[in-house]
Length: 358
Image 1 (tube, rainbow, N blue to C red):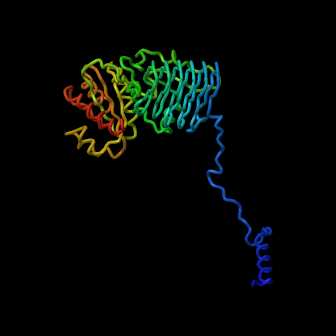
Image 2 (image 1 turned 45 degrees about the horizontal axis):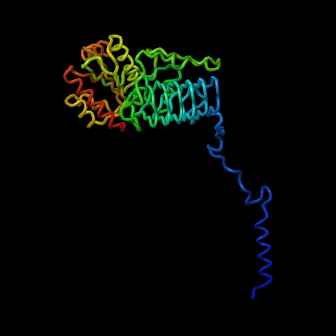
């Protein structure tokens, strides 16, 4: 049989435990700790969306998207400009729009869009259920179309001062662009669902410069010589059987040197076919550079290499002369002669495609 007194003492003890301590007494709850994520500014999805617009010009200035994901949907006859880097962008159910998308770290996905003209830089590009899109593209991986028809592609061509930094913020290399290497998930026998835009396509005829005063503050150039992304020939037919491989190794001025070499070669009427930036290991160098590998293996530790394929009669000799005259003292790999050059190109780009999962 229980003790009444013991039950009374237990009841009083429970009441004391339930009463909150007075301010300043022992056992007072400390202020709730704030973490860094508690201090972040709340993101309103509506700030990262264009929805249900018609006959409007809209956009986002550099710094206004800052790596967030963005959505564009149900827009008709609009001019849309995203002058910033973002995480991913989806474009759904848009018709007769002109769209510029700054560097996208992940994927750009067009779904059920019609009669749109676009300039896009991204890691992954995909369309589904689309008709009549014209896209000037920079894409690090193989672009994919699915259940789509009359899709045309050209090489990305654009400049504004913040764009190079936005590519870096999005983790994209300006030298990794497979814009013309399209994979069609749903090919139709006897038909081609995609093609390339004319070589002489004028980009402003497709996506005009913005007329909105706020967006005119972005200092844009569509001059091919100023394009952040080098303009490559891609899958278009080469003008000559002679190609040349040049490989630049990581250093303080690698990107600037690559651009300078491209400008010099283009000024002599050679064509830039393709570019690639990729990391190499010693075994990769032995496979690609073969007997000359020992000269270059020590340079691989500094970072990725940049490879350039040029095409045209005399490309090998022309490239060698430019490197000796303009880059004297800078160590580069360049094809030794016309006979071995095609093998150099195949060896490097086969390696690069495997390395990048192409």
